[in-house]
Length: 234
Image (cartoon, rainbow, N blue to C red):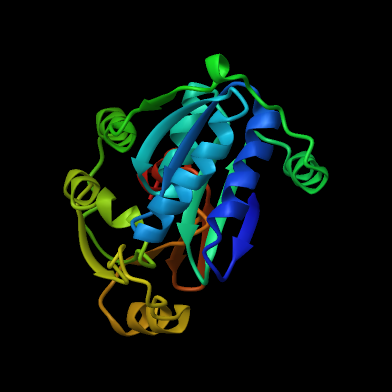
């Protein structure tokens, strides 16, 4: 769920938020981000707060939120994700958001001693791990033409590996994952999907949800595995 959203970049707020997250989690937390520089700096501020409580960070760096959700679930760790969409946002899972907000409001943080400051483990291969497992697990060929709206998220990194494996000829829109410009609106995606010779469309939202569009049929998926289960049944 979305824990934080701000039109302005405020590293002090993000560090306090990190202290709240670390206080609640008291363990290992997976942290990732999208492709904007502001998300990279925001993640750093969040991490400083988290490790100050003694919690450990697994930093997977640049990754689509939907893939991070699958990775963290497999590892059985909570996660925090920093991304830019109409401002700076923090998404969390496996952590009680209301408890974090209460701790931040009351400033009742766990404060680790210098010897107990949490460690940061870098694991930049998380996305490759997920994609490799999906490519190995599924074996089908759709033979379809697909319109993909990446909404300027790191979902662009899923292609062309997945499209080549599963027989999808893909046209992309909103594929600039480092851009601060708002993505072209949903109406543009739907209009292009309707007028083009596409079998279906996929829309990767910044909140880690993928929309499947075919004619009047719309489905939503919060996991790449669930999406692939569905596509394999087409």
